[in-house]
Image (cartoon, rainbow, N blue to C red; front, side, top):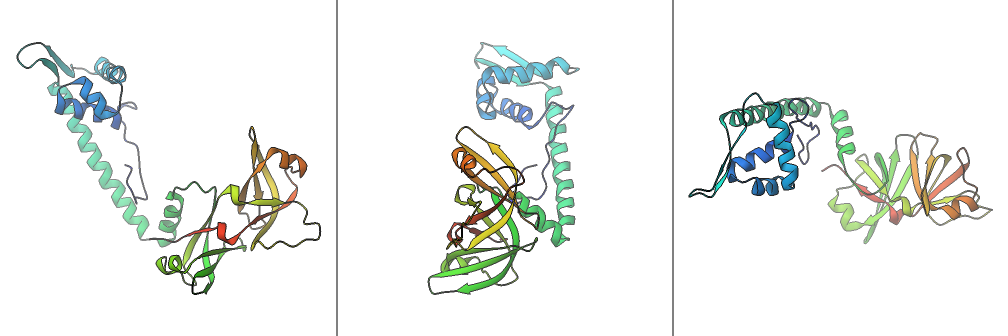
Length: 264
């Protein structure tokens, strides 16, 4: 069962086809008495609602719907006793599933390592590069702060955040943190040609994958510690740099391009 902040979720289905969408439709139909209004409530088209209902009615041992036309009430559709029983069974299963997932989540919460892993994986963000690590150094200034996050593979990523953000996140040495970097913020360097760059983050690795698109490619660099950095590079640049799987390259990005996240 989806839920904000939940570690575990599961999709409940009856007979492999009757899911939450179907029972949301039944609930709406039970309260409105109208296929049109029920479909709208369930986020379905009128035809889509009937397709679901027809499929279930054809498989049921007893009629699920009772329709009436005209009359003082203007007609409508209501659930039969069989449909009400099916709806009640669904509610019971939902409650049992919720209790089971809650019990399992409580078990995971007793193991901080597993809980931390699952919460990191549950975070949804548009940043393609997400690295888990620990704050290994913190330099606080009057306006900004420099945060160094040590990764599991031995690499380190430096982020520059505002002092306000550092205080709000309660950053300190030893705190678990995530470093988030958009692929578009990563520059790949195949040959420094004797120059040094001002960017604080320079991670050397090997090209392990190139996903070519119409205009640009996603180039994945595998670092010695096993972490992967993805850069968005134009196809012209990929060709000009002769990038290919197995080639050495360095991922370069500014400290200001790094977002820092910590557990709530």
